[in-house]
Structure formats: structure tokens, C-alpha cells
Image (cartoon, rainbow, N blue to C red; front, side, top):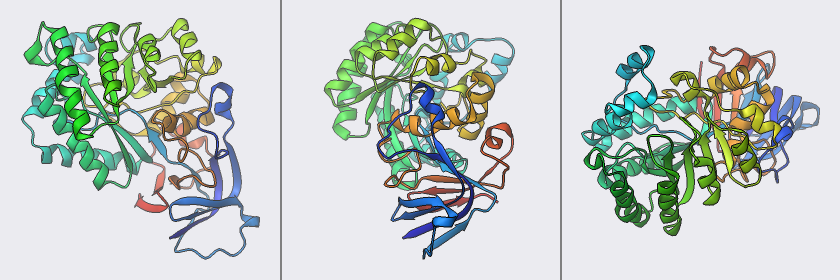
Length: 415
């Protein structure tokens, strides 16, 4: 199957095939071509360049992208889209002044979602998650990481992971699964946090590994949740069972999460709203990737992670949605592009790098996606007619994705 996209106003996000992440000032270095074409054969980009160099190309499918920008599809490396119901009641509480921790302390938050998930069937969870995933795909996401963590019992965590496996089979997007049994302490273990950590290690992780339903292990390492020592115990256990670490760190406080993530070779540490200069220095001396989640900062009225400081320190920064029912109920990556520019002071080009190649790197997938390169997967977004690339984050409330291409095939068209 050959796809031809011609008359492209601007083809953006071009990188050499051997580039797997962009660090610091390199995040400005994705190239673009005005007046371009692109050809994909059997799902892989085979050629691109100026229209004057296209020549005669026969294709099974042709997109005339006159007036439109084409760029790599988004790679969302942190989401929680398998859940039951919604939490707009807590939204009202937060408007009235309650903090994230206060909501959690009274039994709401993650435990609220766990209660609802427990009484929901696997089919109900799958149908709801599939709708959420399609909303994300329609706004430009072609790769989506999905976490468990609203089960908090072995049976319910495995139920979530089976739903994620079903999403992988049903959707055109690439779905990656992360086990997050240590999202909070389950109600049955109230006041016995260390016993719950032992339960995660001795019962949950072996069964998750036995069923082969997750690739990563995650822990909510933060004030009021799991300590660095407990996080280390879980990560070490996960690694023994072949699960690669990725952790929540420093959302609510400077918790030591960054350092324990680095010590255990975490692929990424995510959130970082309370990251400080020492955290950035420690990350600079490691291979762990700092992922920022501006949607959570916006919705939960938290500080925005210091992405500008991280970039100036030479770090690779991805942006992910954190799509979840409590603190970031949106998977719209284009909106995050706007937030990154407006609230984190990233340029449109830096933010695009964070949403694409660096997001892919935070999942270990950037060898074959996240940029426009000959030899990479043809995961692409075709915008509606716009004056420039910068107009996409500038026009923060406007739906400007016209077509989404995944693996060289048009999977949706937005009129």
C-alpha cells in the first residue's frame, strides 16, 4: 500500500533516522520543508522533499494537503484512560479550595475510582476506554501508554491490564501497558501501607509478569503516597520480573522520587511539578527522561513543571497528557502544545519535539516513530488549512486536526 501526501504547505518534524531523542537546544532543531510531498510504502516513510522533486508517483491513496501542515503524530507516554465513571464532584471540591491531598485523605481521588472500577465489568471498562482512546487519536495521537492503578487488588489490576490488552488489539494506535498497582494504598490495607507494598511485590507483580500484560512498572512516589524506600522495593521487584521502571515523582513535593527513579534505571520520571535545581542536575547525569504533564498542572491548579530550566540544562523533555478522571480529564495533545508554549515558555518547535520524538523516547520507541524520516513509521497528522505551524498552538481552542495517518493508513478524518 502506497500513500502519497502532496502539495503540503509545510512538512514539519524532520529528523535524521538515527535521532532517538532531542536534548536541550536540540529541541529547536526539527527541520521543515515548505511546498512538500511525502510518500509512505507499507506503513513506512519512503521519500519526501520539495514538490519540485516529486516526479511521477503512483499511489493507492492520495491526500492533497494544499494549505495544510503535516507533522509527526503525537506520542502520549503517560495516561490513565481505563477507569469507571467520572469525578466532577471532586472538581467542585477543588474549585471550593480543597487540595489534591485533602481529597485523597478523605477517601476520594484514586480510591473513589478504585471503588467504581471494582463494580464495573471488563466490557464496560473496555467500551469507555475505547471511546476515550478514539478521542485521543482524532486529536493526533498515534502512540498511547496506558496505566493500571485504579484496581488496587490483584484481581482488579489484572482486569485493567486485560482491558489495555484489548485496546491494543482493537485500535490502530500503538498501545503500551504499565502496571501501577502502587498508585495508592487499597482500602483493605488502610493504615498498613508496608503490608500493601509487600502485597504488590509478592502477589501482584508475579501474576502480572506471568500473564505478560505489562511492559513497565510504575509507582506514585510522593508525599502522602509511597516513600522512596517503598518505591525502591517495588521497582527492584518489578525489574526482577522483567518490568522496566517508569515512576510518578515530585508532583506534590520534592519527594526523592527523581533520585530513586535514577538509581533504578527508570526510563522516565513523570510529573515533576515540584522539581528543583538538584533534581535537574541529577537527571542531567543520568539516562532517565523527565516527562512533564501540563494538563495536570492546568486542571489541578498545580505549579507547572520547570521545563524551561530542564531544556536549558540540556535535558530531553517529553510532554504527555496524564489523561485521567481526577487531575487531567483530557487527552487532547494539541491543547497541551498550547499550554507548553503559554505556561512553560517553550517555543512551538520545542513543544512539538516534546510531544513527538521525546514522547516516543519516553516509551523506548523513538527508533521508528516520532519524526519524519525515511525508514520511520508513517504516523502523521494533516492539519486543516492554517497559515503556519505556530498557528496550531496559538489557536488553542480550535480543532485543527483534519486527518490522522497511522502506519501509513488514514484512520480518521475530521470534517
